[in-house]
Image 1 (tube, rainbow, N blue to C red):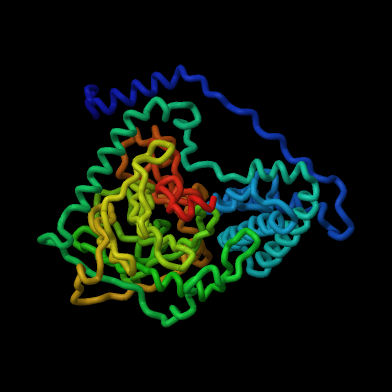
Image 2 (cartoon, rainbow, N blue to C red):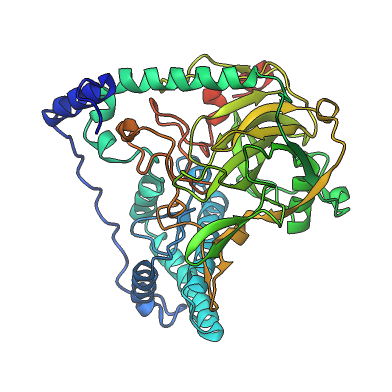
Amino acid sequence: MPSTNDPGRSALVAVLIAAAVVSAGCSAPAEAPSMPERMPADFPGLGDCREMFAEADARIDAAGVRHAAYYRVPGFPYLRTDRVLASFRNEVDGIDDVGTWVRRMRELDYEARLYELRNLDIPDQDRANLHTDLYRCGRGLAFVDLENDANLDYLREVAVPPPEHSGPARRYGVTSLARPLLGAYVRHRQAEVRETFAQPLAPDGAKLRYWQAADTRQRALAPDDFDEVLADPLGFPGMIGSAWQALAEMHAPAIWVDTAAVAGAPGAPTWRDGVPVVDSTDPTVYYQAGFTRMGEQRLVQISYVLFFGSADADGASAMDSLVWRVTLDRDAAPLLYDSIPASGWPHTVFPLQGLEPRAVTASGDPVLAPQSSVPERRPVLRVGGSPAALQRVASREQANPDRVGRYRLENYDALYTLPVAGGGTRSLFSPAGTIAGSGGGFAPWARLAGIPEPGALRQLGRLPTGFVGDGQFDDPYLLERLFRLPEAVASAR
């Protein structure tokens, strides 16, 4: 039983008591969009489409297989969005821009339903028919609904994913009261990270193993300049899957692991007896391509996700996970490296090309840049500790490995439909975007930050980056919040 004199407990009690007298201001919900009652003759059978979406969504939710990477847009069951797409909602104008914006949201819904319907474990032909019918319905409903300017205005208003800091502490004002406590915690943890980065690369007793990406000889497919790649009306470069994989291979980091602290190689998550575990006999790193914004530029990002079996027998999770991300400039050269545990904190940044970090973000979270310089090409991630954490960014020359293992690069999407015993598939992630049974490493009062399940391992698109502010790892303006823009970019805005 904790001591009643515990200062952390006393501070928490004081905050909760104060919060009890805070009036929770709740804004009135926006009005539901007005949908046309009459369906054009060009779309026969469209009248049953809303009911079809409602029935499919009810079945998906009842089975617990909702795909959490994208946000279901309220009132538009055929649209889903993410933070990058949402950032264009007040910029798109004209039929081409609006059409592209809506089409991309329809594509996200199509993709999400592909995973959801597969994890429902229904017969293949029934699944294919339902998926096709929903896609057809979505196309027709988008045409009908968005002919109405009021509906389009409403869509601009609601097509915004909520922040991950959406727990009761945020909604009822507790986080504001707890800022001094949260700020002290953040400063303490950041000091620990800086101290770790200052330690020797290969201390006595470390059992270091080195892995790098297997060479599939596709790197020649990667573009040398994104300005030479055909872009859509929103400015995003379009490339085929093999080109994205080639780009991921080109920038894939080497992994240098202390196996005395981390259980084996970065491995492949799998379901075993209903529990997610890591198969370290299959060295694997997962990648996902994405986009961000800097000034008027659209930049490509490649995220690499590592999973390790937990080396801590007393830990609450059977796995640890770490994210490494590469942001590329328009010349396809690294502009920024950053990393975050899949639990969502701490977020560390490693700027290149003269990017200058701010001291704190506008929302109050200190920027953590624990290493003054890093290799510009093919960095080596020194990983150790329990839970597994990034401890340094090194070069191959510094690592000087006497033996090199190979890991395979796998698309992150594979985690959404993992095989289960007895047949069928299941996502690694829950409908809340977390890995079942994961957690630990954070004090219970970390909930004061308003993050549900603090310490739980989360999927990409659902990663908060701060306790004091409301930073999101997939914030499309993250570079502008973390760094002073280069003069050429700032003057072009």
